[in-house]
Amino acid sequence: MATKILTLLLGLVPSLASAAPFTNPLSPLIAKQPYVIYADGYWYYMYTSHWEIEIARAPTLDGLKGGGQRKTIFPKLGDDRNFYNPRLYKFDDVWWLYYRATPDTTIQRWGDKDFYVIKGGAKVTDTFSNPVKIANATTGQILQIHDQLYFLNDCGNDICIASVSSPTSIGTSSVLAVSDQKWEYVGGNGRSIGNPTPFYHNDKTFIAYELDFGAMFVEHPFGLLTYKGSGDPMLSSSWSKSGPFRNVAYRNGTSTCYSELGNFFVSPDGLELWTLYNTDNLSKGCASPQHTGAKRLDWNPDGSPNFSVPGVVEHAVDGPSGERT
Ligand SMILES: *[C@@H]1O[C@H](CO)[C@@H](O)[C@H](O)[C@H]1NC(C)=O
Ligand SMILES: *[C@@H]1O[C@H](CO)[C@@H](O)[C@H](O)[C@H]1NC(C)=O
Ligand SMILES: *[C@@H]1O[C@H](CO)[C@@H](O)[C@H](O)[C@H]1NC(C)=O
Ligand SMILES: *[C@@H]1O[C@H](CO)[C@@H](O)[C@H](O)[C@H]1NC(C)=O
Image (tube, rainbow, N blue to C red; front, side, top):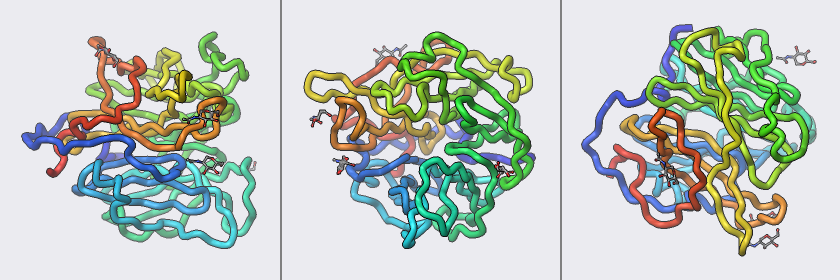
């Protein structure tokens, strides 16, 4: 499928615009699975409340704090649809939303693994309609390598990959990664990796994935798969593993707690990569007001992301480069 994921273009348009100031937290809302993307001059902030998918937009990241202009993609119904992990992609000028949900008329069943894609229009704010079930998974994201699209998802305790021939046609899934490193047992909760989240920097492709997936382990450690640059992306031999890493830290009294990894997003001028993080409310000893924050990623000299743990950035910093000010 020859197509372009608009949001993956990096470093193409050097910008002279200065960035607007920005402070965390991005949102005081109790937002589950927050997701940020820049498109058509706006930041879009998407989140679920388990029974709704909401999307808010504002011209600056800081502007999202006021709630932005909001739209409900799926309104609340009498039943609980248990929405999870919504992700937006633009293929050939049409937006598609990938998400997990319980089927319309059933009650909440946390173990349901019904993963859907729904078609939107040329603008993110256009109506989405006609959901199609594409996989049995709780998380799923699109990976792009060499103009080819792949679907990454959790499968049992492993990470799986499938080819994508159209936004609604996902091929047969095969295992891409299993927990086979000692450090992947860091939480002591057994073999379980999941929530594969791709990101791109210069010529490199990475997939961050959670360790002890679903165990609510307090440090939220994650591993990294780095594509070797050649070879079939569907083969584990084409990737190298590193970890464990931890995301942005915050303090609860004297305890250091770690936030969950959210998605990675590109600045409006394509020059910077940012990460979204989500602090815990209920995890062990780290209950805190749940909030979402954003942080610019730094890079090591070898081109790998610098995941040394910084504290929560609550002071004013420059927002993503190339924002309209
Ligand atoms: C999901 O699982 C069900 C039951 O095991 C199976 O019938 C179906 O083909 C699977 N795939 C999708 C995409 O639903
Ligand atoms: C720190 O965590 C404890 C245990 O979950 C909780 O009772 C307390 O309210 C938290 N304190 C703050 C400031 O979040
Ligand atoms: C934390 O979680 C509890 C239980 O789900 C909820 O009642 C409370 O409102 C949450 N607090 C914050 C600040 O998110
Ligand atoms: C990586 O991040 C840490 C913490 O923010 C910082 O101290 C260090 O200088 C960074 N390393 C590089 C190579 O940027």
